[in-house]
Image: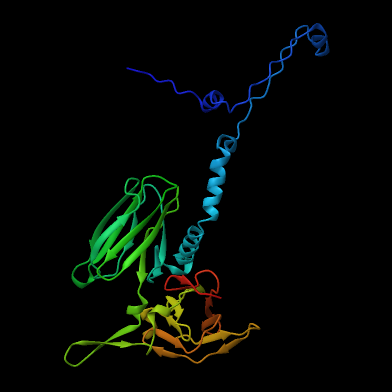
Length: 330
């Protein structure tokens, strides 16, 4: 068996001529020994020379790297576009332990995972999986399974990192759409599951005809799905009628409620003015949606008198201002 001795990094640098040679200590004389108060003075300990990493890299290589960054602005534009399209988890987007994202073409969805934890990516019921591709299939375990049966059959993509501090991407192709995810592993933080809502489907209600067939009826005539903007935050109390999401198409605002809205008392909607005053606004109810024929910055849903429940809907003009995965120009 052969044993190879690998020299230390400093020894290699010294042999290459990068390390400085430590000066020899001055000889100890009787005068120097007396000055130190000792019959025999020890030689002073010389500091170990430190070699800078930059001093090892030839100046020509440094200049070439700087010129490459300056002459390649496309990389910066790509990074900026990805940051603008990235959707981060929000407290208002959770349904129990599931982070529910609004699906949008071209958007990136963040998923945090941790070692010894399995993350669940739940697709739309009835959606058929075509392919799954991950950037790192060595340190990330990716599998799939299904739940339910018939029209309620649902595909689940299961992911698990082997260590913390890993980053990769995941692309899921189905018979209906394509999902782009950014995966990141941490030491402890792990998202149990993520799923999506689909506004283009949610805005369509099924109306049964006499012959038993179903006809799709649009909540809003002339609505362009490409212009939908989901940069809204829902905060405040958590009643049974708390909205699921809010979005607009540039001229109308849509507030989506759970199915319980149709069987309980509906809360009135108020717009908060520039001075903080609340003004009742006109809106119409279409199924489980409030449709407001205007845009607003802050609105409130209020219900009750003595113990009033208040839910605030705020439009975010900075973060989360995406239209089909792109940031709206100011």
